[in-house]
Amino acid sequence: MSKELPRLSIVIPCYNEEEVLPVTVPLFRAQLQKMVQNGSIAADSRILFVNDGSKDGTWPLIEDLAARYVDVEGLSLSRNRGHQNALLAGLMEARSAFDITISIDCDGQDDIAVMQDMVDAYHNGNDIVYGVRKDRSSDTWFKRTTAQGYYKFLHAMGAEVVYNHADYRLVSARVLNAFSDFHEVNIYLRGMFPLVGFSSTSVSYDRHERLAGESHYPLKKMLALAFNGITSLSIKPIRIITSLGLFISALSFLLIVWVFISYFTGNSVPGWSSSVLATALLGGIQLLSLGVIGEYVGKIYLETKQRPRFIISERTWEDANV
Ligand code: UDP
Ligand code: MG
Image (tube, rainbow, N blue to C red; front, side, top):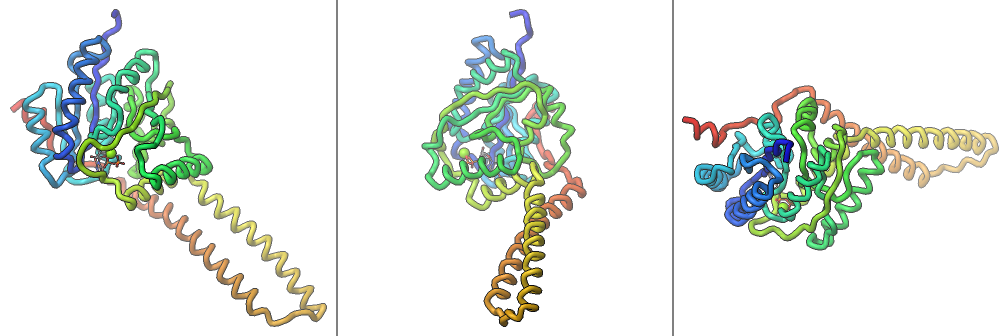
């Protein structure tokens, strides 16, 4: 091959994953070696684990792996910042030294072998390759239905997201360099990469059960991520409120006309039920609207502070140089 082989970094965020890492690390390493051997990627490609402020033995485990294997490196955040920020930290770290990155969860749920298809798609001229789930049969009925409804809702809200794509994707350094100019603190990576542009494609895969350990995405975190997805990508909810306000104002105007006509024709009856109904309805809509607008104001508040999205406390390769 005349073109130089790309250096790949597999970026893997980990939060309290001491149970699953020993199971999945050999799988990740085997896949990396396979791709090195078949000439898809450079020999000095690496796996980069990002410890997201774990409270168990995840970091010592990563340090140990990094000391034992040259193809494993580790990065530790100063505290738990959540999956999206941990992933961002890893990607921003990798972009200067690597040509391509593949982000994946550490639990082996996403089919690791598909990395080969992603790298092939990169060789075919794509800068972003989205991993898309074939079906959601391994999910609970609840997660499946809510997730599908959510994608539809996101689309209706005008956000450009890839259907059934989570955070399993290949991204080239050139995309990451452009992405580093996105300074927002409310991040929803899967919805932001399409905004960067460049040529992209997707590959499909089957998603399995977790190989060990437990999910760190309870309903509360899932809802927070879902909500963040909408509000960080779209201002359509505010527009809908405006339209609703206009519609209700028009309706009220007709109501006023009707009230006047009733009054002058002598048909006015003390209408308890209608006034209670109107008050309740308007009160509800007003509170809801205030809530949605408040959500955006809150986001503006967070953005204006421009706090760092993550703070790196340790790197395994700094130790290695001492
Ligand atoms: N994760 C993280 N920080 C967190 C929560 C999760 O880095 O605060 C990582 C976790 O270690 C895993 C990935 O994000 O690699 C996805 O998490 P999980 O498998 O628990 O979520 P699920 O697959 O159930 O949606
Ligand atoms: Mg998982």
